[in-house]
Image (tube, rainbow, N blue to C red):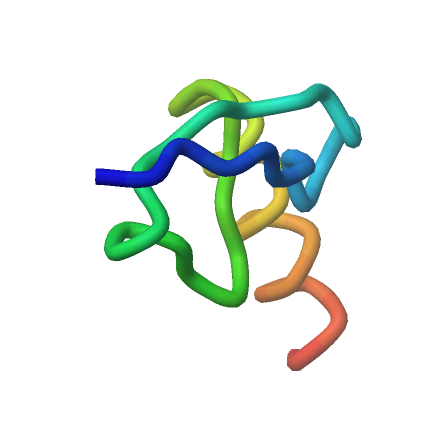
Length: 45
């Protein structure tokens, strides 16, 4: 079990997660994820 540091896709805060859980887009809170997704959906429309 290796812990790695990744950055929040929205605010660039450091997040520490297990290597096996690392994804392309990761968020520090649900608030960051929701605001990022809202921004993304506005640019697609």
